[in-house]
Length: 296
Length: 296
Image (cartoon, rainbow over the protein chains, first blue to last red):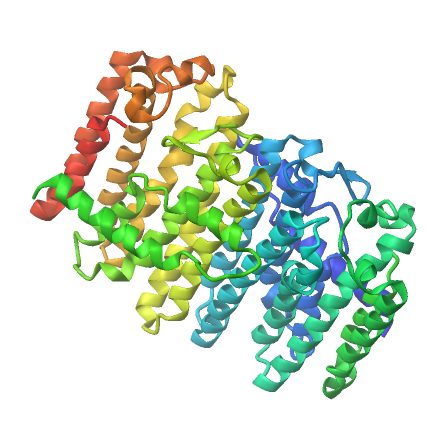
């Protein structure tokens, strides 16, 4: 298995699927739709939907079943980016080298586009539920709907603490809490959605949840490291940005070397969680390494 | 039946129910929770949840069944108020004589509190779905979940047009569209949720939907009239506010007298839709009159 090829395959499948949800019709609110599309189709790693699909494929090959959930999670991710970038929160003008939503459109449009994307995620889920006849499938999806809404709740709470306590002493105390909620909850949800939809048993779900917890935290720590020693032409973020903002991170809390050690350990532990799945888990193992080794 | 007494009864039931959803626990994001609570528990007419309960009670008395949906719709309503008031949208400092959310807290908190309330509505719905065993009930609620998400989508689209085209000629053309979406879609949803949950047949659902459409539009027209001739000590909004903002309304489009005639006709037609329901519909009929005659 070539990881990069596999990843690209997932990304292409997701791009194609997302395009189906773009509303191109002429309607009075078309600029709002354009604004949602602008952010949703801006590229990005598509890590979250990839996690859904790849976890599902540990068990089953008919991955189309989990596409609505892969799409919904990417919508939520983009809602959170649009709102985080707003002048009232992070006040960022660029993301991945492109104008942020409120700079490309305007603030009102960006607020409502974020709202619209969050709500769109639930339109996608409810539409899928409406078209699910099989009772067992229906019940799985209802469980996922509940986990989905709770993970989004955690993400919003994490974002709140991260924003409100930026540069304050108290954030060091809450750092793990912020990481678990702001990013971790959604990544965990992705893995769990794939596993639940595929019919994983309790033990498998537990192992995969552990895997997700570990790569979720690792993902954040890697972000912290990139903020110190990344190439800003590649990351698209100024080096030293976190430090300049007085942001508490794993690097400011533990130092760069210790942060790297923690990162490597987490990835190792994450990979161990996949051992019992054998060869089929190769992609998810490589994905963990990719999180550690990525340069953006 | 005394309308005022009945209305108060509904409002009290709703206040009591909403309180159950207020999160009082000590947690790092408690101020975000306080901010959500501040808006959710700020009073208001509770018109939307009252519509859910009263419609349900045309058919059945066990109204607790629709409480989660009554709560969810009030959360969505308050999410929309918080975001509409933001500096990036209407930039309002007061609502019903109280500081708006971003003035009481701050902008970041208000954005996230709005997001949180929208998402909370779906947490409430998903939690109720998880606890519904009966298949017929489950299917009804899935249908409601889908209608709910679509109505919120319409509300956001209506708000977008209202905001972006304020003071522009083009809004006159879109006025009905804005009213149907921004306020109408949610009011219609309330009536339909009550009816669907109670097991209304197709014909009943159609009549009640018509009723809802008419009171929804009437509600907006009455708002337009109050903006011209209301008592600002009672409405809490400056008289002439719409005009000063160059806002297109039913009054600016049709003139005050014609707007009053349209309002009266809509209410009459709404009441006619309830004739076949007999005495049980007394409250909903009075509610239509209340929308016409209210002074705030």
